[in-house]
Length: 367
Image (tube, rainbow, N blue to C red; front, top):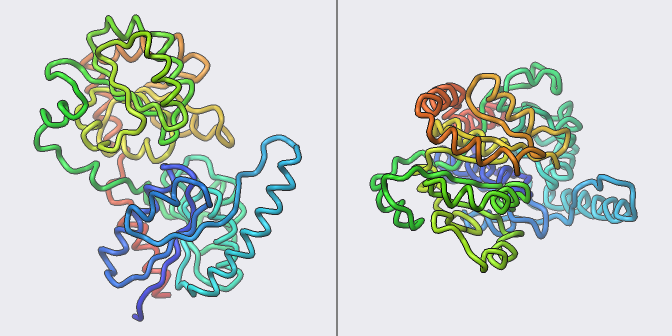
């Protein structure tokens, strides 16, 4: 086989970028001389994260579809036209053997351009509810790698392969020295730890729930690692100038997520597909607060797939200020339920997702 040329397209959030990089890393491991090019959305986080992981990336001037009718619609269609044009040029210049779409704004124009040129295309759908772009592309692609069962309601059954979502490999490495991880976050041994993450950009409701419960947090005897997200960090630091509980450790972004997960007794999180895959593989008891601001309320569907298996606790976004911290502290002190949640969530893990997705890609190339 000649040198394989692969395009991986998508991004917008960590939930799309980390699986994409995991697929690229697995491909490089299996086919060391593979030439891999990423295509993302200009101005989004993949334009920084992908080069940091050692891969080239091209950006499209694409944006999300406006939720409400407004003048932004014109901007959307102008940017879409420019993105389709640039995507066709990228395909022409790079001449890939295969194109993989992982969801996110850039995925649509790039895969549309690829299938028009007869290039085999593969989708990776991370959520339990299919995104609009992936549903539109489904009939044109060769295979669709999914993370949840029963996706036949969105995609042609014969194209579906249940692989799971790839996660960052370093998260699975056992932490040799937990004291080192505790020191890194400024925590003490012998006290429970809660990790709260709102995704790479942050989650307003989760952040506001902290301010609504500062006294409860201060008196809980529980240590909290709080990832605020980039958008909210400066504002939060300003608000906390009047006084911050000693047991609350504030971070804009947790770069050592492997250490954070390793020492956390409970994780509070949104219910993005990538995060859920990580929690499953690590067997972490979790309190999920699905974001209401996502297409088709897919995070609630993701969370419910765990809740119905007694593998996580879910709190509605609207109830978070009143209930989130009471429920979290109750859970932290209930060893029996922590054990049960951990055992049940582990059963839902798919540890070989990246390997299985690359199997699908290589099989299509053989065809």
